Length: 282
Image (cartoon, rainbow, N blue to C red):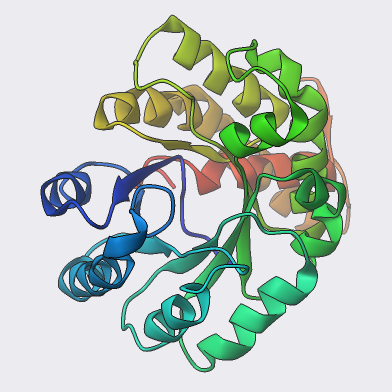
């Protein structure tokens, strides 16, 4: 299981060195160098080489992933092959993921690489089959929602309230939890760090999501704040796990704490809190 935190994953175009290096210098948990939407057709090869160079330079110190071109494009195979040769690559992000076979094909091509895979589900077919995608490979680390492409495919306005997407969000979250991988929210479709952005991310956090993509560095701090448990929540999680451990030592599968009956379900919740806790208290 991939335990890497993705509270705030910042996407940057691999073809723009200034923006890519600014992203890599940020405090985002993960930086995703984009070879797909942010790169024009004539720059795909040079962007790929630039991304690989940045992974080689920064990948040992921080999480750097690459969003490759889709499985139905002429650049896909070269992208995957190049990523398989890259040392210290955190993951490949597959856009428009629609079938388990697409994930398994990348898995096979990665061979002995330590890189993981993230599936960006952003088409009607991808959402329909998200459970099969989620369980397609042990290398799969996360499901990510892509709102812009999905809205276009559905004929839905991209400016609708975040609650409009609850059915999609629940489907992705359920699939991720069954597969025991992360559920990551897609980027907000503006670059503003405002109340609307904070409300949308608080909504998905409360649904159960582990983090979010952001498309501008200004949004990182809010995303980190929203998806980082409070000190009180971290302390309570430690107390829950300690109480259950003491109960287990006594041969009991349940315990009582502050008037609450504790069991394995609360232990799961406590472990999830600690997975996103600040490093000093995790």
